[in-house]
Length: 390
Image (tube, rainbow, N blue to C red; front, side):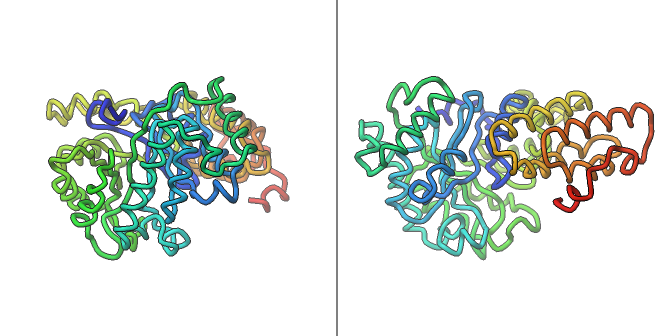
């Protein structure tokens, strides 16, 4: 049985977000919030051939994140077949195919949401990925599909570093799922979903916007509701995604549309605590009682800063020092709810190393205690060179 079917409804998972849900973000979200399921940010299937080190870095995960599905994108079925073997060898619980990314550089090549325009190819990709999984489960080796020995050794080392074993304990078929949108230029959700259902994916997650909308306007949950109707009677679960800012929003959309669950994206940025109320949410949906939906958690500043630092430390240990600046956008999300957030943000958007973050938090805590605001000038300001780097 697929792990998806073992999760009590409604499923509340972490949505993949390009440039956001990296290994550090997912680790913190898993340890603090414990979503029902986690998806990696999308990884191009082409990296298996042209940038294997990048693929392994992007597919770094921790055991605490389980169940976790690796999300991949591309437009060549034979490459999906090969990468499905790698995903299995790395011990993931599922494989998710991105058919929803609206980025021009992705969709213009016929990948991501571009596949909505080529439904036959989309189905062929699902079949290729599933066949790759089946062949791996039946014993096919990575060498047999042309993966060189050095890459195989790196995969085994990644497994050993994560869990102490070089390969999964058993070869088993993992479920294939799809994340997509309601259309390309126009809403075509019924026909598009029926096309995907022909391949019987375990799950179809639907973002309620077309490719042309990108992330503008409002997510169309009435279209997602029609997808639920289109899938009625099938074994495929339908998850909704888009404009879910709280568990109250989740309750409303689940009860209105009948989706089997949701994926939370931007609402989880700087807020891994949002998943803590998922059990109460499930009870509320079961009893059809909106009054019992958990309120947003009131997180003390001390806990917020402690988690923020853990996030930074994990990132600093995982990535090279020169890319620490990528943490800036994460830090800005964490401090949205703190007093004098604008003052704090001024410093956080200029950090370059872990020590800068630690110093910022120390100075902020001291300023808050003594009420010595505004703090932009009074804190130990970064040198002018560091400011220019920002």
